[in-house]
Amino acid sequence: DIVTMDKIVALCKRRGFIFPSSEIYGGVGSTYDYGHYGVLLKTNVKSEWWRAMLQQRDDVVAIDSAIIQSPRVWEASGHLAGFSDPLVQCLGECKRRWRLDHLQEAAVENGEDPALVRCPTCGGELSEPRAFNLMFETTVGPVRDAGATVYLRPETAQGIFINFKNVLQFARRKPPFGIAQVGKSFRNEITPGNFIFRTREFEQMEMEFFVPPDDAPRWFAHWLSERERWYHELGIRPDHLRLRAHDQDELSHYSSGTSDVEYLFPIGWSELEGIANRGEFDLNAHRTASGEKLEYMDPGTGERYTPHVIEPAAGADRATLAFLVDAYDEEEVEGDTRTVLRLHPRLAPVKVAVMPLLKKGGHPELAREIFADLRVRMQGEYDEGGSIGKRYRRQDEIGTPWGVTIDHQSIEDQTVTLRDRDSLEQVRIAIDDLAPELERRLKA
Ligand code: ATP
Image (tube, rainbow, N blue to C red; front, side):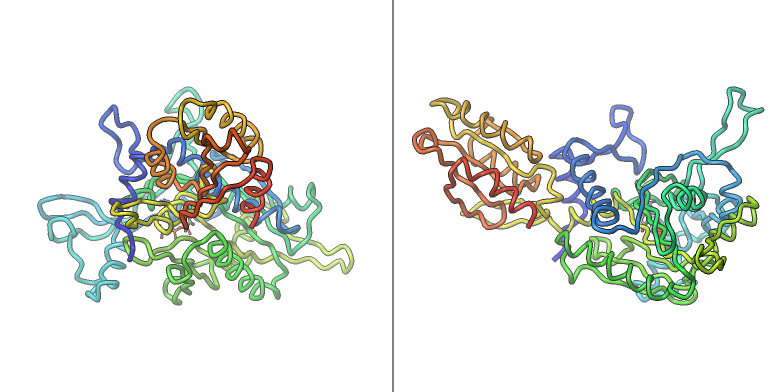
């Protein structure tokens, strides 16, 4: 059973993870702000991605390129000409605009004829499709008319390709090696929606892996299994995750193979991440447009070649949504319904909550001492407000894996209660053993 999107949206708002942006001005459609726990959660998703790319391997380096780049980048990449969606408008009552490809995909999913799609809102007939460029434009320079038109990047990948030579030189790399980037991208999506699944500004986690041409199929397979493993390792239910290879007619013009990592969202199986074998398309395009030799020369053999590229491209917000959906659970405990986020401890916004049972008897003082020791090791929270049951419930809802309670016995024998979010098991543990035990569990 899959949780409804409404429940996720409600929990996110109730606990301050993610909420509609600009609410005091009536909001802007499909735009969201991340609150405290949302920031912590998404930061953890991104750190785990960096950790898998950088810390756990020695063939990937990091980059952080500009959001506003030379417009020639987008000319060369094909985004200016080709980054457009077929847009249709309802000719019936509602006049809404839709992306034709999305409507057709939904029709196929429902076993209907994609050629006969109508407006999902009012059933009206749809206009002929026309192209609509998805890039946001702005001008550089103080005078609007005289300024140069530039674009907010619609993907982080191009900022990597244009730095290929820099990395070869300064990081002294040779294929196979990768360049990884995390950052905001912007697309003027026609039909954003489904909470943070599709928005007009979002964060991507992309890595371009450059390989000798003959090795491309092998590395493509490597990255498919690596990326699937990453989600599994962070606790995603295996039966809600799948790899789906694109059919020939779905492939982008530059791709000789693409597989999507799909997750069973409340809206059905949908793309979480795309993994593509892009061949030499990108480096060639930028070489032609810039005149720079974007190739590799093997110093041993003197052989020159243009590396092929394998690209795992993920969305940080979409991954965050998947982890939230996957973690959400409701269960009956002693006649009450408990809502709990069973997030992997490394993703959980808060790892440990430290709670004095009472606001007297020396409990708060000892609790603060314990908290001071724990917070240098992991994200913690000190909480003394309300009944202990209420505090546990609050921590369950934000996915805190461990709760530490200080009571009268703690004062006497220097032990505390350690509560586990998932099993609800409570054990007594010596205060001295607490930090090492939690660090051990976090690494497990
Ligand atoms: P879609 O078909 O869903 O529009 P796409 O195939 O155009 O996505 P890519 O260009 O491959 O997406 O981008 C890589 C990843 O970036 C996606 O798998 C997704 O996780 C994320 N992403 C892309 N567009 C959006 C968006 N509008 N909002 C949130 N995340 C996005």
